[in-house]
Image (tube, rainbow over all chains, first blue to last red; front, side, top):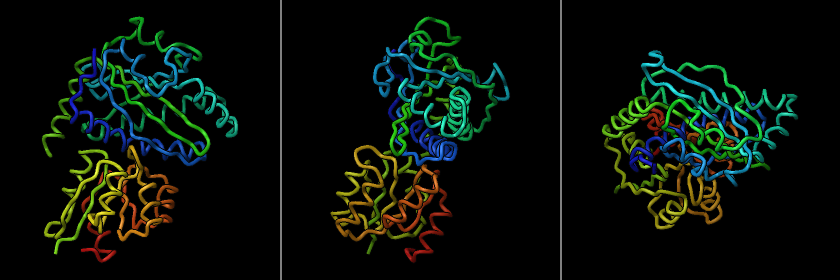
Length: 204
Length: 121
């Protein structure tokens, strides 16, 4: 499936993500005690099977990655907006983070979970605010180290087929951190978000 | 005579939001730029006596625009409007000559207050 967002929907989601990622960047900067350069988040809405090939900021999508997952749901639970957020770190980014986290006396896994929590929370809280909703979160868990993207997205293990891909690149003073936030959701939730985005766009 | 005002942001929605937040009755002629390169070109052409500048943009970011304006000694009063809320981001842009820093999403009252503070209204 090719990206099915209209340009206006993408622009709107990109700006909402940009604001959310600005907040996440600030939290990340405080956590890692570095200045973070932000870049424009890239947005695509895809079939989950197309995610691996769409990860443009990971140098080789077939190389091993580290991934963290966290489910989210609004006050209506399974009847409302819900899904699974997956944060993907390229192996080089996971290595950079491991080094920075060691300087903070933080174990790599614990740090990756904290960083994922910051990214997922900032992004989804930002979206929820615009959607006049509120998300609850399960605790993040490490899906795996040194695994392939294909093992997550191409084997039909996921509960839903639609993925909102938010590509994020943070650059520290000396290091480049590339990560991807993928929101896997049922079509009903995706449509709920797109309807709200269309309402926002119609107001302009 | 209308003041040349430039709104430089890669997001179409954000440009519209800034435009909608402009004080009513403010006599300005608005030009839009989608990235820092277009923005800098508009400033060189005199279309940005006042500039509302985003930081995170493709081609050339807001820091690059501020650096070039400083280097080329261009006459432009620049207010940064950005989602990058790190205190150091604010410090950096102020050192590069920005008048003020307003965080996104834009708040019309804060924008008016900043314009009044600098005698631009």
